[in-house]
Length: 338
Image 1 (tube, rainbow, N blue to C red):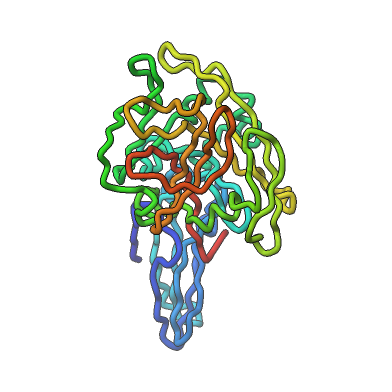
Image 2 (image 1 turned 90 degrees about the vertical axis):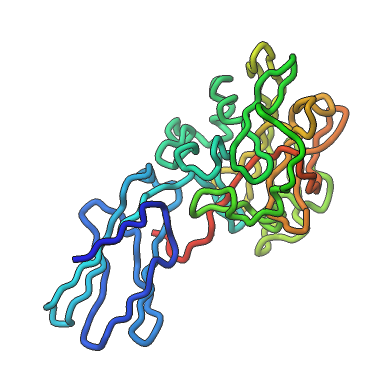
């Protein structure tokens, strides 16, 4: 008997077994354990051992997850066992246009599962609601907990909205960053198994043929439809009474976007504090809703909830190194979904 514990979350190819003639190979799991590994033949007696993933796994709380690779003679003799283990983590996701988008913005240390909302403890799912419904019904304190995080540079350390000198600012904000988040490797800030969505990923939701006014409900059509699906529906709400020190923030926008062609999936919901790019804080153009998205775009592209005089619309904007951004990851592609 042999054992190997990765000691962390891992998926896709875990290893390759080469099996001589006269031998067989399979995977076994204890009663009640998910079939989280599978064997994929690759020719010449080789089998790739793949670790899989399950959307919104209610058991993904960081527990140790194990399975056995069993090799034996074809007559059942000379059994060998290889126990393989990993930590079972997962972030809540929803599917839209071929991408499994994380439902929640990153919080705290963006690389650390323990700072994130796990699929085993999704407050919206536990309330029997979509995230959009949950943000409407939750307390102002809970909204602030989810809403108030942004990032700058390559540290992965989130800054939270606080009051400073009578203004709402990102706590610990400092300019002079030499790193633009959008130009980092897509895995640089994410927990294992997740990544920063690419510009093309965002374009599957944002890149419309006309101006998208996100402060109104409506629909928009994509410049490049995903597999023929071009329509995106929008629904927006505002949250009021958010306490930040002695300040009370109002009119904080959250916007649900969904495809009418796939009603079985809940919307992707965008929320978060406006960008801060100097010491004056996050209030720009009369509101706190100028959300800047972290986007994997080595060319410097990006997306932004921009506007002026109370208007708010989607615009392409890669912004600069000193601009704070929300982090919303996607699930990295896997070969095997169990």
